[in-house]
Amino acid sequence: EEIPGDLMDKAVEFRGAMIEALYARAGLTLREDLATLARAPRITADPAAVRRFADRMQREADRLAPLVNELIDLSRLQSDSPMSHGRLLSARDVIGEAVDACRLTANAAEIDIIVAGEPDATLFGDREQVAMALRNLIDNALKYSPPRTRVTVTVASDPEFVEISVADQGI
Image (cartoon, rainbow, N blue to C red; front, side, top):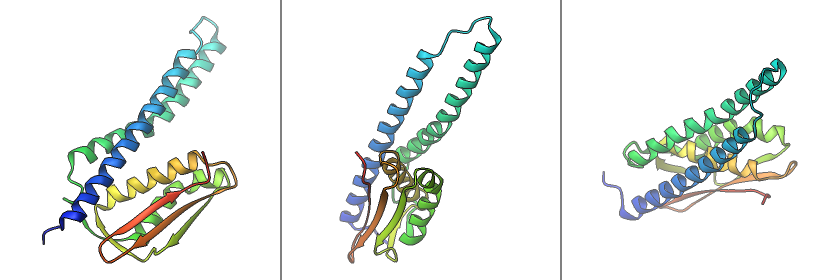
């Protein structure tokens, strides 16, 4: 069955937006990590200073690991057609997966994640790509939201399209 042109256009537009968001996030995170390393103390003969530096390096490596995974995912997004692995998906299931992945971050900041609209909608897409996109959007919303606020994931649909939006109360 052929995919309607307008649906393909929306998928390509969504894919482009996700790639831009991932590049922006990767660039900011790398810039922060490089600035931290540049400010790190020079290694001296002082064992305590060496230990502090090693601990700092480990923390920075731990921060970079998810970024490397995101860059790998980004590479996959760029090389893969957004609809080549598409199938019908439950919006509720994909959103639930993304919300669950972000739950610890939300709980730590006492931020509620609310799902609103029409979560029973069915959409067409690659499950991994849609879930990754939603995780990134929710994660960014959490990152820029003040504590004790909320992030809302809203689903709207019509006979041809399903729109999932993420809104925060942050910057």
